[in-house]
Each structure stands twice: as structure tokens, then as C-alpha cells.
Image (tube, rainbow over all chains, first blue to last red; front, side):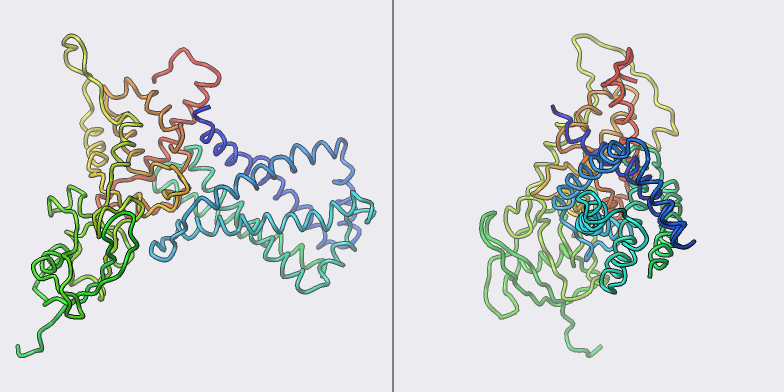
Length: 203
Length: 256
């Protein structure tokens, strides 16, 4: 098919927001229960882990879209020739950052899933609960890794909203695109605070 | 004024042919008031002696209009792609480094082959088809305000600076770059051109088309004519979104 690349790029853009971006937001908000104590977090985590048809929700809302976005994203990242040195405009810097955070997130998310959900799946841990995260984050290197991971994910999502709006032709004029930059900056700040607060609640 | 003779330093990335490796050569030229990169290259051609005092071959470059409307003299000057005719020596940091726009095949020294851009214009059907077997009469009128707006898009001189600045136009991707995409918007805005708008939209939905844009926006920052390239790309994104749904779900109106 002649327009396969077009459709694949559009699908890549769409999946980044729906469902992956929405899932990320939901995930960070549920994590935020940790700031209200062990009980609150465990109750929320237990609720999420025991949703009806949870395995199908995970496969179709998380694993498949995420893997498509990750692997096609790697292809996109490695077919660009970044030039932030001579062309150090804001959008070009964000373009480069989008690719670096994307590649980093493939590693981070793979590790994060292996350490939490996968351990539950193979029966090495009963549930992804407060103490599991407390254990992981008691290592200062892991804490730093998770802080960078959360910030990278939130940045990639926020900047991804901006390019989603352009890719689908929603924001066209310079003014509209500038306003979208302010809006996505706000998204970045708010989600970063939520994500980082949750991380420190485990320490 | 009794000062020591002022000179200008140039470092030029040269090569003898497309397949040969490049090398740097330095030149020191006498300063002249208001000199630009082209006049400096002309001085080197007049007296091809490099900074080591050796006689060398004159540096090859391309030029035509000398007033930034033809696009032929584009090259990378101190790291940024631009036209050398409007690159004033007084405004450049020295040594002035000249490189060919290596996104394109380098013919020799600073001369590049921009054929790919002209091929892209063919691929996206960047023209208004009016030929017929009989006189079709006048076309529809274009509102004056729209004409003024479209005039800005028509300033494109196919210079290649937007392709050189774009991180997604490279040998690993077949993305055609901003310039031919902007021409699609221009031709689709033309009242007669709009009669074939779907053909152009479907062409840029093909391989190497619109989807290759990664929104780094270097093109619009670099365009010497100030063409709103990224706005054009976003507008085409909207048009192709609609076209995509039309193609998939079917529509009784394929054109507009």
C-alpha cells in the first residue's frame, strides 16, 4: 500500500495520546495515593489490579499500543539526523529531546514493567503494593532512575500532545501553535509535580 | 588611515567530485568594503592562492541572480544554510566557514545538485493543469486577499535551505521536505488548481510525503523568504486527515 507510512505515522501519533497518554496520567494519579499513606495506596493499587477483564485491558490499552509506539518510535528516532548545534531553536531542541526521552523510556519502561508487573505475573511477588515500591526506591540509584523516568515520560507526553495537535492539523497558525506550547508546558509542570510527589511518598 | 591592511579569513570545505573525500582549505583575502561571500569567492577565483601561499584550483560555486531570488548560491555558512549572495562579510564571524549543503549530492566544492527538489515537485503535481483540446474560457476568480496571501507562498525559490536545515531530510529517510509540501498548499489554494486538490493530497500521503515531518520547525526558522512553511504543513495535515477519512469511508465528493 502506497500510503502505509502515512497511516503508520498517524497511528503512532494517535496511540501516543489515546490510550498511552491517558494511561500515563491515570497511572500517575493512582500513584499519588501514596502521599495519603500505605493503606490508601494499597487499596487503590488493589482496585486497579483487580479490575474485571484486567488482562485484556492491559493487553489492548497498554501492551499492544505501547509496544507499537515504542518500536515504531525507535525507527523514527534513528532515522532523524539531529542538528541542535547549529539550529538551536526551541522547537528543534524539543524535537531532539522528544527522541532522546523516547529512546530512554523504552529502556525505563521495560525495566519498570519487569520489576513490578512481571514479578507479580511470575508469582515472585503477591501484588505490586506499597512495600514493593518502597523496596525499589530505597536504593538511591533506583530513586534517581525513577525520577528521570517519570520526568522523561511526562515530557514526552506533554511535547507529544503538542505534535499530536500539529500532526492532525488541529493547531495550524503560529499563534495557535504557540498557545499549544504554553498549554503543554502547563501539562508538563502539573503531571511532573504529581509524579514526583508520589515517588517521594515511598521514600 | 595607516592601519595594517585588513584581511578576511575563509575556511572552505572542498572536494573534487561527488565520490571523493572532502578537505579543508584556508584563504586569506584583502578586505573590501561591503564585500559578501560571493565577492570573496570571486576574489579567490581571480587569485587562487591558499593561506599557505600555494597555488590551488579556484573554488567552484553556483550562483545566478545575486539578489536572493533564484536560490542557486545556497551553501552552509558558519554552520547555517543560507544564500551566499546576501551573506555580508561584515556580519559574519571569522574565520568564515563555507560548506556545501550535503543533504544534496555535492558536484564539486560548494556546487550541489538540487534535482531531488524538482523531482519532488513533479511527484506532488505542483502545477495547475489547464491544457485541454479546446478553449475552456476564464477560470474562477481568486479573491484579492487570498491572492496576497498566496503570493507569500509563491516566493519559494527551491533553494533547498529548508531541506538542509531539516533533521528528517537525510540519507536514511525519503522525506521530501518542506518546500514541495508548501507548493501543494499553494496549488491547492488556486481556484483552478483546487480542481485537482485530491490528487495532490493523495500524492503527499504517499511514501516520503507529509508524514515524514517531525515538527522540528527548522524549515520555517531558516527560510530566507519567510514562507510560513510549518503553517502550511499543519494545514496540509488537516486536509490529509479529511482526505484519509474520505478515502477510507468513501465520499460522494472526492475533490472539495
